[in-house]
Image (cartoon, rainbow over the protein chains, first blue to last red):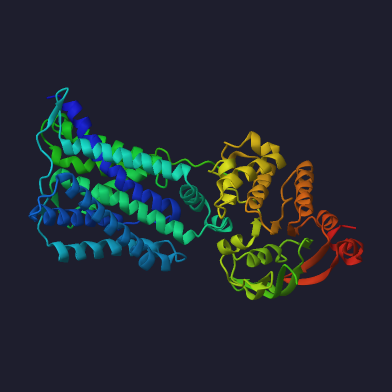
Amino acid sequence: MDIFLQQILNGLVLGSVYALVALGYTMVYGILGLINFAHGEVVMIGAMIALTVMTILVGSTAGLPVALIVALAIAAAIAVCMTLAYSIERVAYRPLRNAPRLAPLITAIGMSILLQNVAMIIWGRQYKTFPRLFSSEPHTIAGANITDLQIVIIIVSAALMAALLLLVHFTRLGRAMRATSENQAIAGLMGVNVNKIISATFVIGAALGAVAGVLVAANYSIAHYSMGFMLGLKAFTAAVLGGIGNIGGAMLGGLLLGLIESIGAGYIGDVTGGFLGSHYQDVFAFLVLVLVLVLRPTGLMGERVAERA
Amino acid sequence: MSMLEASKLKVSYGGINAVKGIDLHVDAGEMVALIGANGAGKTTTLKAICGLLHHGGRVRYNGEDVSGRPAYQLVELGIALVPEGRGVFGRLSVEENLKMGAYVCNDKALIRDEIERMFHLFSRLKERRGQAAGTLSGGEQQMLAIGRALMSQPRLLLLDEPSMGLAPLMVEKIFEVVQQVSDDGVTILLVEQNARLALDVSNRGYVMESGLVTLSGDSASLLDNSQVRQAYLGE
């Protein structure tokens, strides 16, 4: 088995998920300058909803086809997450729109804790197992293994990211989102209802996050009420790595972070002579965060066009 | 009935009364100049009229009370502001900026025609249609800001210091266009520090001083007024 190729594949799978979640952070930051720390929990709730729907449908006697079960579960997750994100913005962030920046940030952290605890009450403290719907028999490509599900993760993520880029760059809504992120008052002068655009941004980010949550939980076959915390931090790191506020940057940052983590985890044992093992995987993400913040705080693609005159 | 009527307009922020209860009106088809020194409250007045600032008193547009309505709703009624300092979207292309101007319009064919009209009006913009607006010169940005405002096909155009920071040739070009827009039937309220320029092109004028209107009348008579000549025309 080719270790290097294997780690690249693992990294792509992990990175795709980071990228999807990172988009939610970066889009909201781009428009409001707010780091929505509750986003990781929205992702977790997406996974939990999908898991619940799948468990019910698999347990039902109707014997539905797998594709339909998955589609229904993802649709339910997306719907719930969009509603949740819309409500969070409406109830928790909008009243603080003109407050000092620290107030919404603390509110976001509070919202994150609140959602975790609500999830714990609903779904319990135990790890929940995802029903096995995909074959876990791996395909072998050039000496590396990849499962059906992992192929699905890469394809779905790529498709969603392409769709988002098209939306942001070629539609009226996307143009309004970019205009609003540059200058809310001037966007208002163009007839843009800024509140609607902000809601749309939260809702789109939540939809992407819901899918990411389902994919990551299905990949590891487990979901847990606290899974959003670490995933959220990693995705936030990815957004910072790419340049927070920059959509292309979040995609690049997510993929890079996935690759760095999995290659790091794959080789750390050899490099340190077995002293450190692959369970130190998480160290890499935060090492990256520290390095980016010290060396290039604007991130890889974070440079903005200067507004002259 | 006037197209725009502001009565007892008051604006204060941060404990400062920037506008202290002024009355002004603009009739359909007119070009009205609002002149005065730095800090007189001209820009604040415009921002209040177009819904960017909370204000006291009333603003009526075509007889309808629009006080306190947010800016984005006034655009649909036909009011457009070209803000001080242009306010183009620097990261959007020239063409995207123009499309933003037509945000309230849903007719794609009409938007395409309007963009062509703007490119005809400002040929420099056509050459730079794909370029990020932030890379344009100050004059080009002013052209873009005016073009963008015209894209919404306004009936009332509010212009805030269109000559600010521009080379004389560019100012001339901008004011040619302003004159042309006015000739096309768009009602204009023009805020300018360059009093001579503003009074030359306008029908009527108001002079603002520390938050109050101190003088008003025909532009021609204001140009002859000794106070105006001394204070604003440097004679």
